[in-house]
Image 1: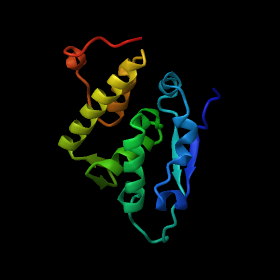
Image 2: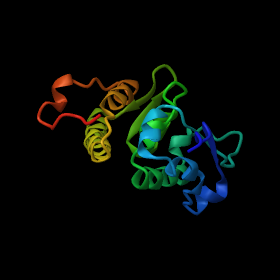
Image 3: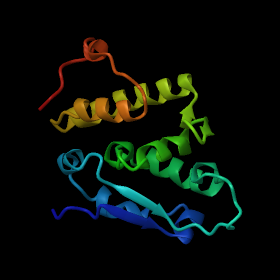
Length: 163
């Protein structure tokens, strides 16, 4: 299959109707291709805003709702979002309580981040193992971008990774 586009635009209409079809090029990918493209996807939200609106994108209820639906139906999404441009952090901010500081950027509620990331570890590790794949390294990298350090012994009670 051809490599999906590295950037997708999500229209205001898709946001209003909770239409996830903009993600279709990525959801059509084989799981191995998704893992190979970890950290490569950028999402651009085409949402009308007043020029004096001080809110961050993660504070807009419509974008949060679209992101929550996308995350629920495409649990691999955080794994493929671009990490270097802040796409992953913005996505997680759409899902979790957080604060924003001009000096420190997004600050997640530590307990919320720990619960979400642990849940994502279990979910994506199981998803990849069922397909004979291993995404543990990608999960550790994803966690590091979010300021979460994964203890290597975390995986000890769980069967060894495939692949």
